[in-house]
Length: 267
Image (cartoon, rainbow, N blue to C red):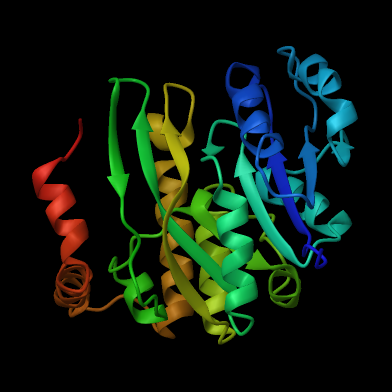
C-alpha cells in the first residue's frame, strides 16, 4: 500500500465541554489512516480536561499550557505538527464523515495546491435551523477584501509549510485569526482550489463569538486592518460600489449557491 500522506488537525478548546466530544469524535472517526490529532486546552474548568483524558490514548498530542488566546493556542499546535497538511477545528464545530479522505485525495491529485477548501453547513443551535454553504471560486485578495467570498474555515485545509511560511496565526487577533491567515496566504501568492464536496459544519450557539456578536467592535477593527493589507490602501468613497460589485460576482459566479440561498434559506 502506498504511503498515506499525514494530516495534522488541531482542536483548540476552552470551557467547551458541551461540544468538545462531538468535535473530537468527528476527527477520530474519520476513515483516513494517517491523522495526527492535537488538542489544545489552556485551562478549562468545566470538565473538558477529564473528557480529553478519556480520549487521551487516541490523541497524538495534548497541549495544556496557558496561552494568549485562540490564535496563540493554534500556534502551539502548529509548532508541534508533523503532517504535510494542516487543519484546525474549533471545539464547537465538526467534520463530516469522509472529509479527511476526500481532502487528502484532493492534495494528491493537485500537488500544486496550497489550500483546498470545500462546502459545508452552518447550524444555528439557538433557533434550531441550518443552511448549506457553497464555497466561492476563485478566491482573490480583492474579492476577500470586499465581501465577495464564501469560505467556511472548518472546511479549509492547508499545506503546513505554507502556513508556517506566512508566520502562522496572528496571536494579537482575537476575532478573525482564520480570515487573517487566508489573507496572508493570498498575499503570498499561495494557490487555492475548491473541492466540490461537503466537508464540515460550523455551529452558532449562545456562547460563541459569532452567535452572540461579542467583540463586534474589535472584529470590525481587525477586519478593517486586514482589508487594508489586502488592498494596499485605506477606506475610500468607492468602497460601497466595490462591495456591491464583489458580491454580485460572488452570486453570478456561483449560481448553484444562489439557488440554494433562494430556494432553501434556513431550514
